[in-house]
Amino acid sequence: MITKRSQDLLLWIPSLFLFLFGLLVLSHEVNSKGGNPLGLFSIGYERLEGFLSLVDPESLSPNPKLLFPNSDFERGNLENWRASGTLLLTQPASYRATGPEYRRVTINPQGHYWAGTREVGRRGLSPGEEITGELLSQPFTLLRSPLAFLIGGGAWAGKTEVTLEVEGRVVKRASGANSDRLTYIVWNVERWRGKSAVIRIADNARGKNTYFGHLCADFFHYPSVPLRSSPLLKSRLIVRGSGYDGQFFYFIAQDPWLKRFRDDPTRYRLFLDDPAYRYGRIGYPLLLNILSCGNPRNIPRSALFLILLSLPALALSTSLILKDSGASPLWALLLLFVPALPSSLGHLLPEPLAAALMVGGLLFHRREQPLKASLLWALSGLVRETTLLLPLAFVVEALWKKRFKGAFQTALSALPLLLWRLYLLVRLFPDQAWRSLLPKGGILDIPFKGILETLKAPAQGSSLSVTVGALLLTLLLLFASVFFLRHRDGFSGALLLYSLLALSLSSRFVWIDPSNVRRTTFELFVLLLPAALDSSKTLRLLLFPIALLTGLFLFPL
Image 1 (cartoon, rainbow, N blue to C red):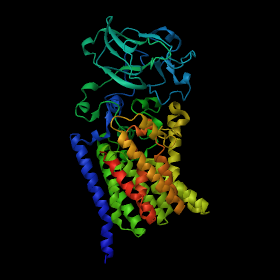
Image 2: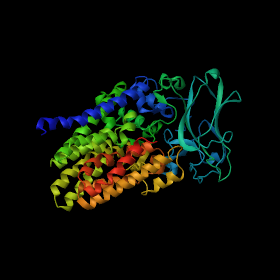
Image 3: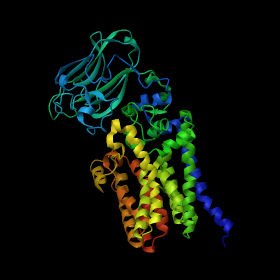
Image 4: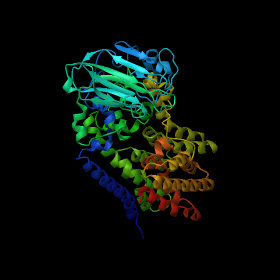
């Protein structure tokens, strides 16, 4: 016979195992970065300037030294530039001319103006690939090295390019990468320091059907730190390319209230791919800011502590839910196989924290403590807004049963997120307009569309993972549908919503990388465990192929 003391001890076993699992994964990942957890954030080289401006405010002021007046086009005209061809009628491009939503997320210039040979210009010329010509800067003296700028558009060397000419000779050139997302370019110009130079922005790609036959360029300036020789890049703490999602939480943790560029919120585009979307998930970076006391050097270790603590908290809440349901708390050990955990731990991402808060709220809801539940759900919603689908389902259930007080108390969980969105609207409105209130993010699509598009053109080596993931999520939808028809309550409704959400992920932003799918479906897998133990014997038969496919999805062959 199991005594009460033994039962209490069983509650802590899953927590201990998840803590050790997290400790093992994080230790391995930190060691792979030379012992510095900063590397886990996967900060991309393309966003290195924005990163350095936040890490070391003295190394790069909010207004870096320009090559010459108006080399960033922020005067809204072509002062100190000479245009030829149809460029004379269109430059500089601006959101004021193109409209507040036109390509607002696609392109990320610094400030309000940039050189763009596709956008509508100041005089209203229609956009298109037919705009051609050149912008030639005034002669200026190269005062120091390096020289940096932003560039996007076509990869047509000799046709769509930016060149640096010193004493009449081209010494540096760069083209886009067939993307309107501006990337950060740094040129070492030490050997020409003190000499006269000009910048030439050229678009000579003709024809309406020319693929990316246009160019975008902006923000020609002198960075204060020699980025290419940065010890961060050499020590693998900075990755080449655009990096991964952890970097955005790291940046935001150093400016959670959007104060640094309050006068020009467009500057957040230098290090955030989508400021409204990234800042919308403020819970995790705000906690990092508090735990680190605002010191950037303490943020990586604060993230390690917070994510590691979330794992046993998630396991304990799940164990208590299982115990209250009459099941063994040891079933919570299956949380080790939630597909999101390895990638989230490896990049210091907040899914474990969001899951712990969400399941903690579920525990208090089942124990009829709605205010405590709403508090935890409010925090989880600030970390990941999709966790609020769970309390939303309970609100609908309470209204259906005419329990209006309970519905109101549960609905309070959405209030902090709503207030934060209103704050973002005020801060980012000059740049993002009404999109600050409801950022799209681009991760959702029509159910099954993203899967089918990815199967048609899978990334290298991802076809099997996509197939396995699609079969797994389809089975989970079937399980959730039958479970909902059987119970018809808020919990079963939430499970059905999450299963539909998982099958509605887009190809471009999610299915292109199966690790993204694992991360964005964490709510479904976390809630599956209490649902499985509360289902009928017939329904449990679906759990065997689900378990097999989960293993294949987590550990692809």
